[in-house]
Length: 107
Length: 191
Image 1 (cartoon, rainbow over the protein chains, first blue to last red):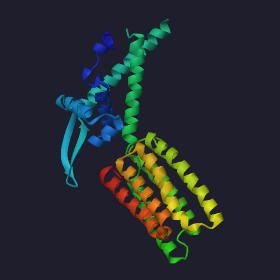
Image 2: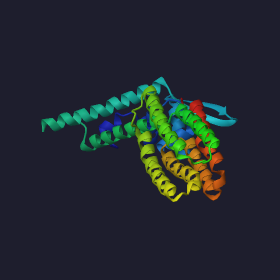
Image 3: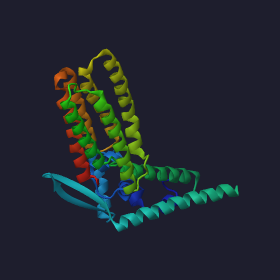
Image 4: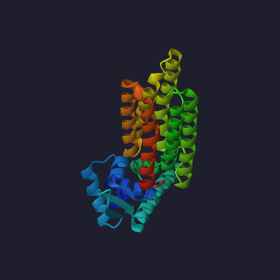
């Protein structure tokens, strides 16, 4: 979609695949650990932490660091802002599809 | 006006979101309480077998297998309902399809070995095949399940090499391991 006016109207922050995956996964199962997210998304350690940091900086997710059995544990939670962003993104996707459907019906 | 490419991309993106959400929510769909109950059943069965003369007494272990499968089914359905995940969701569906062939092979081998009178090989074979199924199924679930599968495989290997240890190995595998992993899931993955 790069370059089209439709893609320009999308939230670039969660349009990227891994970031969209993180937000979607947390919308379904809040409080996933780094290892859980890595396994669900099939992402590498570096890739996942870079994208998670971008989402954290934007206030879409919250990172909780703690210890479990003396081992460090990182847990990710979706913020209200992040959930709203995903909902708006989904709405935009649905609009694209319904506009395309209308256009098809007219032809 | 969205282009054809926009439409295809939107469809693909929605499918990706749906897949990711399904995979995330069914990731921990295995019921910890179910595993704990199955573990207790395994320990009771081991104790009953210990009272008799035959560690691999089919009059004990066939009902145990049936009860355990029923408990697993009921507890996973209950967890799926509680966490609002489709009952036949991604992880559970794949887990069943991966474990079922190993369990079927185990049932067939049980018949063949029993006809031949090779009861001493049954405990190791049960543990090894169940372990093979769980290890493969764990590809779609949390790491604790894979750990359980590999441990069952090791116990099965020991059981096949040292058949005299069959009963304690069954108690560790079907009892202890289910209890441990079940507890881990209850504490860390919501019941």
